Image (tube, rainbow, N blue to C red):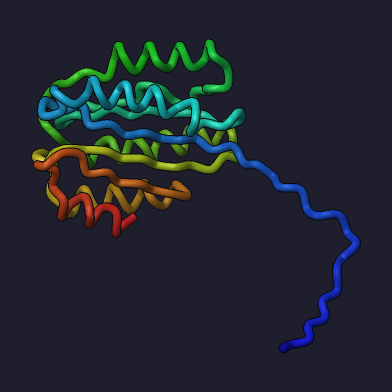
Length: 179
């Protein structure tokens, strides 16, 4: 048996401060996603109400081959049903398959999205979610890993998801390790 003495503080417990998070979702829209992209759009739309807090925001970066990428949504609030409906419409309308697969440019774009949002909302934190079913067939592996390193340096958390049987597991694993 042990005798333990502990002093209990009479001070009020510290209030938890919730920091707004910008969730950056990077989605592969290359041709190989043709059969799966409709399901991914539906899963994303179902997950958003559970993922996004009242003060959080969403950015969606789409990508395909070289020069085929962009921010579909940037720092978009999803705090009301009207916001959610607008986001869902944009996801359905614009996340469509096209082209090859290139990881470098969308990762660079994600880092730029962070820079732009930090200017407006310096108190935000950032979470990066990257998903692909393919292999980068546009950029050298070293260039992709440099882009990952830069993007990861701008965010507080990163998730890399390999989708399907033909994803470049070694590259996606190296990306996750670099982040």
